[in-house]
Image (cartoon, rainbow, N blue to C red; front, side, top):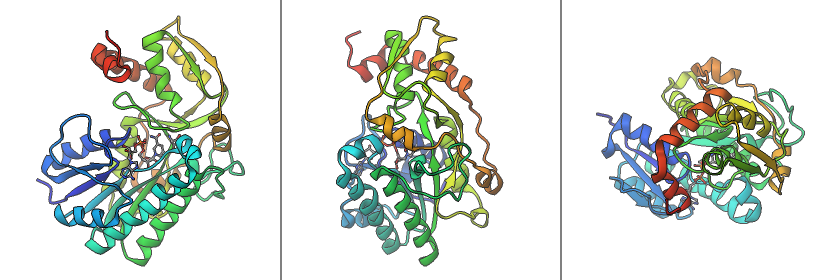
Length: 325
Ligand code: NAD
Ligand code: AKB
């Protein structure tokens, strides 16, 4: 069994719940410690209530469990971040610095930090944005991720820590619900298509954004974290591409499975955020350094989402929407 002790911050979120499952499969329940400010929805073997703004508590928990690796997933996402910008900066930047300092103090060397397409601003090349683009985001979330990328590089070089990072696209998965992002529509649309046969999208129909399927995100994260150290040439964050598409293109693909599905559009304040992001990015470095290749493009994602959400059945409808039947 694994000699690693892996702690996940923000483990109850959209990604944490799924990444935790994969890490537990690989390393065993005893070696994966979940943590969040809110309790888990199901009982888990090792869970700590842990606020990343409390640095002493982070150090105590790392020492208590002899932690060797941290997957730092706690954050406030783009749309929520624009409502509470100071809190977003505090959690995403001060919270990350607390994690880095607690790691340095307790000898944790290996850390995963998720960045985002939100690092790109409206001056970045829209299609196939290069790895080394100018990063001038217009959201506080994007600013916090640019800052996190620089701190990752700084701690890697200054303190010889092994910090690895990916610029995740918007993540689509059936396993969990998204938590306050601009790309959330691409998950909501599937739930609404199955439950009500229609969806009103908060982005306009031709808003192209980079997206990725949950299975690919988990695979990419594991591939990056397991790659030999000498293969890691980028210590800020790797561009990562799954597939890129618009709300209209998802709707058309859903209609192939649910012909009566109706899509309408009522763009809100999230449109401005999406407009400032790129359409797609160049992930040549990830492909070269640790052999990244996505498995899912839009038609595969749509088929897999609909199949799995249907298989989850009424139980999940009740859980997600609090419906009687
Ligand atoms: P999420 O919002 O679903 O989950 C974040 C979790 O962090 C929540 O469970 C929340 O309770 C927890 N949290 C918030 N403040 C905390 C604090 N002070 N201390 C401890 N925990 C706290 O987010 P997610 O979608 O799972 O995202 C995980 C990471 O991936 C984030 O860094 C996010 O920026 C990044 N990311 C996500 C996506 C996506 O589409 N989901 C895309 C790009 C990047
Ligand atoms: C968001 O929309 O905020 C996230 C992200 C792309 O970082 N899903």
